[in-house]
Length: 294
Image (cartoon, rainbow, N blue to C red):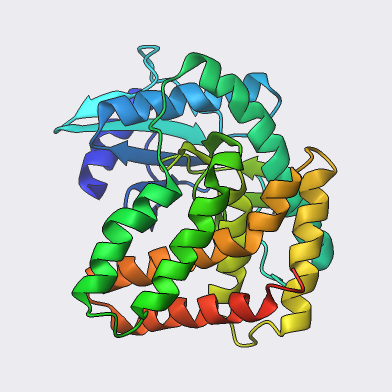
């Protein structure tokens, strides 16, 4: 893939003096641009349109650099490539900083508000956390013979989610909210990246995914119960400074976080990674013990 990128960069009038892989489908070009590769042309075109609409809503996203022909992307060897300018800023490293947690809440809410404009123009995949829980998640846990997650715990979580699900607002969400996908520069949000998993789902999924993910970060010092609850408070307060949450959403936050961790446990079991499946169940138990405080 690197050889292909080096070969096609002249189509943008560039030569790669330094090309470094960021992750499996993205490369940084000379510290100034990012080249991303897609196998799915429809997904690429959808993501490009998302970026255009978000930019029109004054949401900071990477600017696409057209090829010399004026095209937004280039096809080469059954792949589609587009180039964007590298956003200023970096990922947050102090995940316990309450001020930054509040800013993450604000950032999620502003993105959700802009996403409503995207839904007016672009069809998106409708997904349901409840359907996933009642479907493949349960299947994977049953295949494991309920060794890591017992049947009673799973059934109770599904029942709790089912009782509130119809009352939870649905809309387009990011679906992969973590500090790696939100960039900050000098303490302020400077850009959103990676809309590959964006879908319609319950709105609070993004909030819950982010908060539960803080507990799964592999850092030297784990969150204490007090520290994490402070982050929960900061993130939700930041979100509500931009968009209000319904009473039903607030009450459902612990339940949704727990279901997300069971989803991760099932996912890891599906790829035969029992260690991380057990870790996800450990996060589930931690959240469960915090329910009344949340």
